[in-house]
Length: 241
Image (cartoon, rainbow, N blue to C red):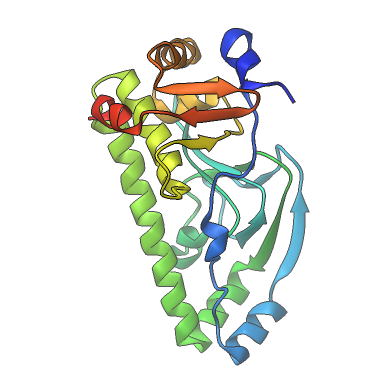
């Protein structure tokens, strides 16, 4: 695995470990005995390799996925072929729920960033399960609300900051807040290339590299090995406005 030091100076590969803490409260993990038993009966555990596509934009809903390990990137593609990454989901997150509930095609594509495992449920079995168990339907509503919040955060990240530095600062703060443990400094790693980060901030790979260099010179972040540490979150907050 290449270090982030090498990445910042001469490559565009950021490789890392889990940053999404949502597995502490995974989707549909707190169902009562009868509902939990039926949920387990309609679920299959599947392993996916890096680069696998769980579903793609415009595809009819066939399954929903609850990640138990690894990470998956969700993206959309413009008519010109430009790919924009909306977010990266990790263990505990549910994928494909919106398309299943709306009985519509998927609005995003889901590609595996690193080897992962997921609980897979056929859409028709899942919908029948929700009709039978109101507590499961309530949990599905909670998950959809969480997805709405994530979508809102994506829009805010892209629309509100007027500079690329602002959008990148906003993204770093999102990652920090996702695993905030109360400490001023936060160390994280990211399984995304600079080009993929550019897709999340509506800019170019070269600009992402330049701004990361700028952040290091100003001692807002440090990079060591495979770790990126946010040193001055308050300064990043000012840049992100």
